[in-house]
Length: 603
Image (cartoon, rainbow, N blue to C red; front, top):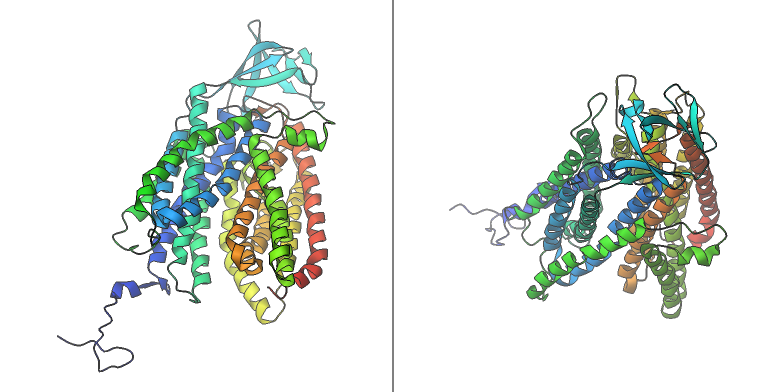
């Protein structure tokens, strides 16, 4: 036997008994990072592929109104950010990260598969002055025409600029004009299909709660305390998010609705591809070949007999999420003049929970910090809460991507790429992921270079720039709308420009948020502050749905009745929220100096 020399004493054999495989590296990082990177990429492949389809699926397959579509979408994404608070706690106390990730992956896979069973498309009809009329459609895509069947005659539906509706006879003359509010488009849906839709969304929400926080925890366990590779490791890991979402936001819509002259395979195919990606993510953890031994195991001393109870409780939570979704769908906007109390009283249950928890936790933590912390700790906590509030505003506007901006892409955007081919509305969401992948390394180099020169912007300044950037993106699209053609469609590259500006804004705020919380929080409640951070994003997702509802336009059979009115509605909303974001961003920049003093040197 030949002795293997050690680094400390070349003449002595290595008796450390360390498995050489444990020292294997992947680009200078622990080898296990590669598997976790791929696991996260495939999970995000499934989630963002599904998300690229969801709004259009609700509006075009189920024929929900814009208000119901965007409200349900906002509630779904809000729960996606809220449930990880519970999933992380259960993993820390009982299951361990690895078991939680595998269980979450199974639930999410089942959720995506359940969405495949949407059944036949909803059948459109219209209530006109209280009487029901059938609606038929001819053609497809931009050439689709919709008719009201009245006494055996097909009357073409035409929305007017004053939001009234005209029904045109075959010879083109106006057979009937319906006043504003007299034409109520609806859809006849299969109740079982709607139930399966909501069950599928509930499975995704609950599964995400187990998966999302714990895959990141597993990455953290790969590095010892003080290992300088940790931040770079998380940077590589989070690149998996954007790579996964980039490809899925192209492929899932491609299978679902096609591209150009090809009509795709159907909605089921897009959701099935998302489910396949999620299954691959599960398999990478389940069949790791021992590569993840010791990573994310059950906490020491945690009872092993609670697993089935937790799994059963998660399944029993499905009806709870189902109820919250149905409550959102039944929401009726309060009458004008009802006041703030009237508005709060009529909020869906989810809205009451979101706002109530946030409005209680923020002042509650501040009072505790004032009583229990030092003066400096209280001031740092105050700065953190102010920044959390501005962060909520940012994500409220940024997350229009999956709702109002996707509907705008479908209705008022020319989706032709240099006249060579056309993409689908769902595929426009890939712009953000593509720009993040391209720009993130450049921003990292830029921030590091500025830090070496002592000119890197402070956290409040970065947040302020991000808010002004998200507003500038909307105003850029509004400018592009002035060049819309006679078809009232905006060129695709104006929408791509919005996503470019929004991606730059995201890189100014997203990477520093969690780090900011850990630096400014009192050590004894840093976990609670992380919870408030994620709660603020959940609130932002919910409010994003409410903002998107303001941009609602009248549709029949999933198609707008007047594209001119549609364009004017979207432009009006985007103009207002663009200006609002810039004003709020400017306010934060004005507060940057006093906030810097409250932060006591935290950068």
